[in-house]
Image 1: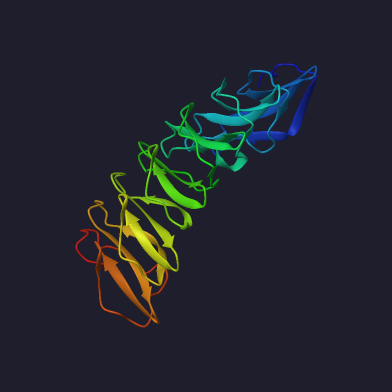
Image 2: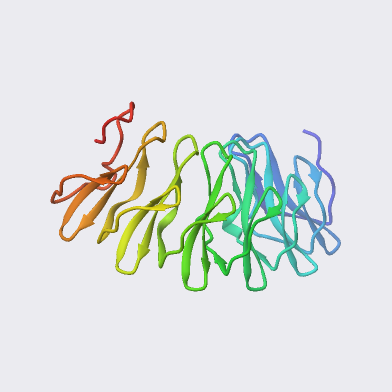
Length: 259
């Protein structure tokens, strides 16, 4: 093919291809400035670049990365720098499944926010990196945040009820994205919150990811009560049993029974 543009230096160890091999990005230098090159097109110039932060959308059509300029960190999406922050979570540049949206965790001073499509959301004392998730269709976003000594889930910018902890990873959206569930801790008890409504309290949630029916109308999870286990469907507890195998909870395709 044709030779690419010329620079004062190229970091060969930053060559990154899309999964299908059709697109190439890398970092280069012009004097003291660095820039990302995407498909042979040089991007804006920065002082330093974030190692291993080049991220492609699932279909490879979009690219994002982190870089610094004048002491501020920028997330650059499709060649356009977003707002400058004191820090951005390197592991948290997240594209929606269809690639149409992008979000990341950032902070200024002691305040943290999630930036969705370039727009910073509300500020909190901390946002847990790696616990940011889009719905399957990408139209909704949720994450886990902290204010004082309380944790809570933020869905579409709206904070939910406060708890002593939010358990195990990120919130779970129903397949159509209309509903969201997560496991929370309240003192020594655990409960599942569905659409912002806390469910009954138990000694533990045994299979910690709530399961939605295919159409999202129903939700189930396994809970622990003393030495016994039980399945809770739509807030109603079933009979107590000695054990429930991890990963065994699922709705039938019609959503009318739990297996």
